[in-house]
Length: 383
Image (cartoon, rainbow, N blue to C red; front, side, top):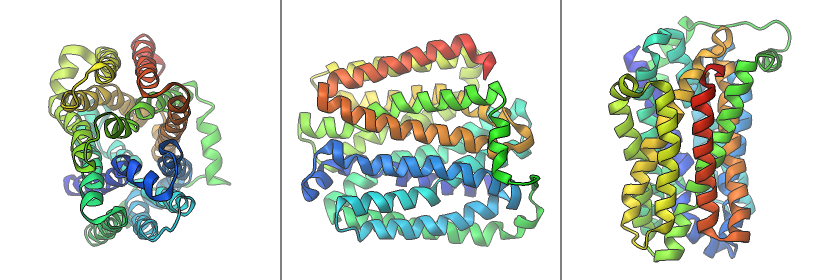
């Protein structure tokens, strides 16, 4: 089981790279295609919208045919989508190919957590999930660094080609190492239309609360975070490589959280974690927008990663518990809300930036995250 969880974490890491690789290259793409940064950010929203919608399909498929089988086969499609991104000749085509990539790259995190939920008791699950998401965090840390460095050295097309090659490699490793387990996985057969189970699960107020909070969480956090790279470029004229390295601090903060999660749970409990996470995120966004020194962003992105996962990891555990009878499908609903919130948040931030500029918009979104942390502390029993 440990090797399988590690391999799923490896696949999640690659999906994390694909998710975050675009942020530092936004100014370069905007310049090449003759578009505004807000318009170019549609390639982030396209990926996130596809990611959100695909979850609704992969959840029932994972329950019906096995989580490992679905993850492995979907990564082959993600590889093809990434190669197609490298060949795009205009912004519309690039957004479309990012949409295709998102359709296939969305499985490792959600089905990986479902796999853990099937095999790890609830009382022991939060630390295991925290260690598992080190894969996703590491990928998200590498994403901006890869996007900035490879784009600076070889161009944005090479960046997408590299992502495609890694998807293909991870797919091959999973196929070789886990195929023997496919027949042994626990499977769930749904009567009638398997996708109707989404509607049945949404009849539960607990499921509705978790999905809604997942949407709000990423709407505010990633709506603000996705524009930090553009803010650093326009405000300080840093290289894409340096911007990518700074944004990678988010992943470093997440890894630090994973190392400290057991101690934090003992000292703060889940209610304390979500409150501290919401408050700290707002504080770091506020400081980032007020500081005149770009070097201060290094501490800010690390702090944002640490505080984000204080709230996010708690919500992930709640998502694994909300529908144990159809765990992958329940997590599909949660992940769809999570990804849809990110897509909507980036779109809303793009509009806010065009109307009010970067600083007030990012501070406002950070304040929204603080309010969410306060609400979760008082209402954690509903989740």
